[in-house]
Length: 136
Image 1 (cartoon, helix red, strand yellow):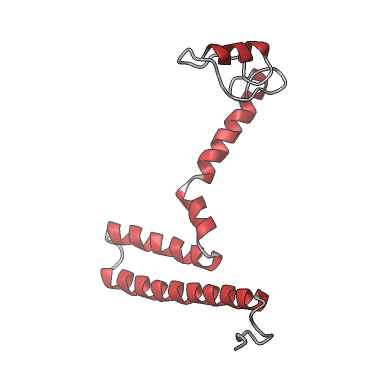
Image 2 (tube, rainbow, N blue to C red):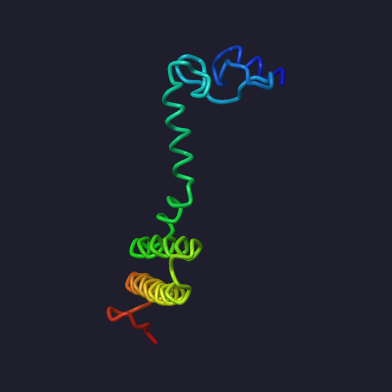
């Protein structure tokens, strides 16, 4: 730890502030010698970065990145159906039917995306002819 304090004191590679637990901060400093979290001039920017980090880790944002774009609306609708089922405003038979249809839609879309990716890979492969079939 003494080595870290010496480096921080020199101001070359570590933030010169002290953390809440009394240890020296180990983050990279900005121009003023303090890291983004400790710099008073960057306090607002740091708060925005924390908010953005929390937003980008939210379930809805992760779903939007992972889910095929055409399925996001279906997911939102099913989420609403689940809420209505929970409140008792929607008959369970309607919810079951919607979930079954949505499941089939998802399977078809995923299969289509896999087929499209496979076609692209086969077209790019040197072992295939122009029509996508392998040479034998």
